[in-house]
Figure 1 (tube, rainbow, N blue to C red):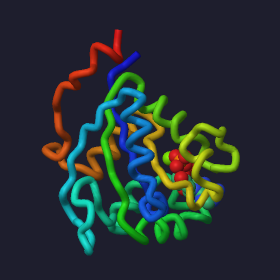
Figure 2 (figure 1 turned 60 degrees about the vertical axis):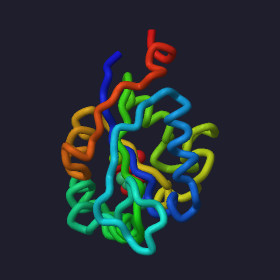
Figure 3 (figure 1 turned 90 degrees about the vertical axis):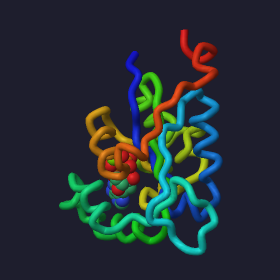
Figure 4 (figure 1 turned 180 degrees about the vertical axis):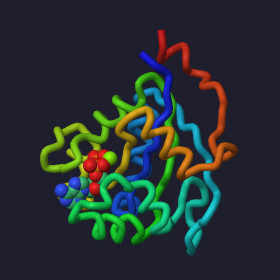
Length: 164
Ligand code: DAT
Ligand code: MG
């Protein structure tokens, strides 16, 4: 088991559908620690201030660089830049792989009931949330979406009740 970090984002459809709280809540209840604050690039009207940004197409091209040759890439960039996303860093033991399991499969219709995508989404192009797929990818994505001072370091009071 490794203490590590992952990058999670509630995509524009998840934000519009009011699923930000639900997704944060699942990671909180699992025992993971939220490690980011984010107050840049807030869209108007400003309702939620923290963690909230409308990503530029440049940022998204970089974020999804490995998919740039896929036929769905232009649609993916349009969708991801169509509204604000809720970007987060989460920390804890094996949070990258466990986080992927909590999200479910890329295609929501193949995603088990009980996962975030399996419970709340239908189409692959509207799968409501992003989670890094490896520790290396996570560090790359965190560095892409956040400056170092936007990632907060603090101790979780309940840690000894979650970890042995
Ligand atoms: P994941 O988001 O599960 O890591 P990915 O990195 O392979 O999946 O792809 C990134 C996003 O691109 C995915 O969340 C939704 C979109 N996508 C992937 N495959 C697709 C497809 N076959 N058709 C349409 N969109 C797709
Ligand atoms: Mg991916």
